Amino acid sequence: MSWVDEYVKSLFALRDSEFYVVASGLTTSGPAHMGTVMEVLIPYTISKTIRSYGRKSYFIFIADTMDSLDSIPMQLTSFTELKDFIGRPLYKVLDPYGCHSSYGYHFLDEVLELMKRFSIECDEVLTADNLYLEGWYDDYARLFFSRLDEVRDILEVTSFRKLPPNWMGVVKPICSRCGRNDSTVVTSFNEAITYECTSCGFRGSMYLEEHNWKLLWRLDWPSRQDFLGVDVEGGGVDHFTRGGSWDTAVEIHRRLFGRDPPIGFKFGFVLVDGKKMSKSKGLGSLSDIMRFVHPTVIKYFLLKHDLEENRNLRIDPKYFLSLYEEYKLVGDGRYQDVKQLRAWELSSNGIKWRTSFSDLLIYYQIYRDWGIISDLTRDYESIDELKSYVEEWVRNNLLPEEYDIQLKPSSPSTHMRDLILEFCRSINESMSDVDIHNKVYELARSRGVDPSELFKAIYLLLFSKPRGPRLGKFIKVLGVERFKVIVNKVLNTSS
Image (cartoon, rainbow, N blue to C red; front, side, top):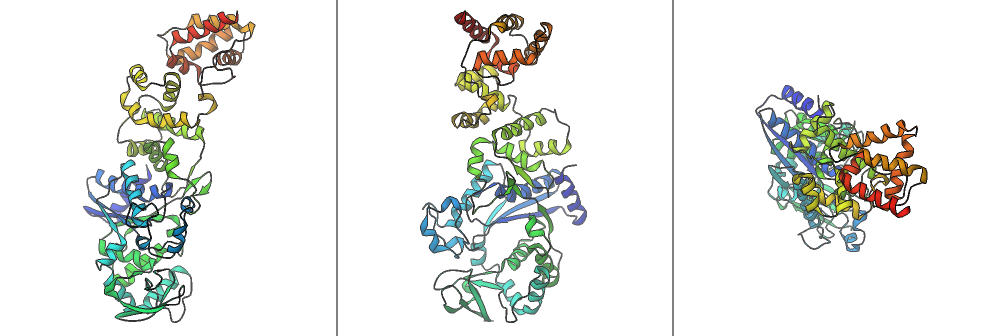
């Protein structure tokens, strides 16, 4: 059984209902990476599966635009003006590209565009700055200040750290002088919040109703879950480790709100070549990956693993190609693994590509004309979906050696000429690619020749190199008669 079916069935057992609110949130602090996709794909998949079992689900996405800009991602280091905004809430940081009202909203829009490309649908999108401005957090802040000793105890016990005796850090005020909310310290609360900023030295005060503050993250998360009525929410394994923010959220729900917490889930990291993805280091640029790998294949890759398992994406053309091929084989029913099949169902929406990506790479290098390729394959839908990716592979020379098939005919060794001609005479257009490929083995062995030598001779004749694409498939795509013309031309020229 797939992880998503296991999780949803356990959800029904733990919280039997006809309607579930599923939530997901992330900080819009920079360009998206594969981990960003996980933050929305996993809860969306759970929400979608709940509906497939005949129950209702409502999927909410929250952008944490009140979080402070703690660092400048590597991709944005050329925007030196961003240094002046370190520590400020994301919705108050300038958009370096100048096309949105703020930095936070620029990268929120990027996430929303990403969802469209991955066919991820949200029922509602919320931003933290608007939720604070509308007063949704006000009563929670009052509650936490009124029960400060309990809040302190919960934080110390669940985070395994001792807080200062005079700690009152329920909220993080936005400094009236420098605009930072990462370096302010609350000194008292009596309807008004008094604070001092350790960054610029300013001391000031504000009322809760001014909404120039945000709750401490470990208090923010359970608060919004409570007022949004969230039943299901998860996050990366770092939130769910012992002492993580999930432990705090659970205790806040139970001890201060007097109700059960949402049903949580945790998912593994997405690694790139074995390393954890990072916005600040620029590792795993999703925009680059998506130039070469179709979103449906990326979804399949992310969903086929167990929920808490790390996913390791290798930035290697052969690996990307193997994902394309595996995705198609699963869709064609060639793999019987339940987890892979379920991942394919969830990522493909039942749409099959009749022509493989590797075949299209060969077709495109031969013909460079999608009209001709469409007429040859009669697979207009697959070509429409995949042609831009094929072009990127060829344009950027991302082709593994065996798929780099620029024809560079050269004369074979004399002792192989007759065998190659005999091979040409033995194949015809009615044969399948498998039959053509197997004919090499059959003919070579009948003449006492190692089949690898005949393969090598044909590859050298076509490409001037000893290896190439699977020969039967290539000849079928090229056309048997066209293959014969090339061979005869080369052999006649050399003779």
